[in-house]
Image (tube, rainbow, N blue to C red):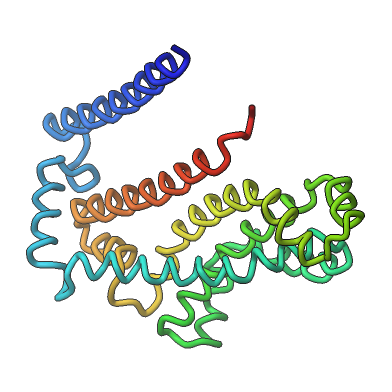
Length: 262
């Protein structure tokens, strides 16, 4: 009975979300049909759909839509993988040792609030205009929130749990692997969600300089020619990809950490 009520409640919530999307589409359609807003700023849904089909068939400036999307996702996932393999181990160590945290924390806290474009010029000077500077910018955007979430997760682990394991003969490595990492994992995954959001938002900035492909570059390039229909296509595609990635992580959270809050 309880599962049935939970299912009904979940269905209602999804229904409300679906209804809100329909209302938004209806307002968009009515506004564009009666031209309450200039089509240059708000193209009709039909125009956006036709542009989407045209991009699939013809591409944009000699490059297919699939290539633009895959190029951006490649930059994104390479940066995220680098952040995963550096921010999480370093965050665990810094969360465990205040002395090591004191070394890295000022550096990370200094660059974390800086706008990406503020130091992107330096990255271009150091790494060139190719993929290196773009991936580096995305990596720095992903690193800070993931590192901070990992440190916070480790620091929340009860000291009694660690002391108990050490008393029973566990080595420091065993404590890291079997106690600290599993206990901090929910915070790490939450930090990953935040990290992906920030990195995804930085993707457009990364593709502003000397890029000839990528969904962010396509949006920026078409905006120069007032092609708002293609701009809308790019924005919708980026939004749907972001929702898809976030839903995968949220699904993992529900499965792996179903005990949280209970």
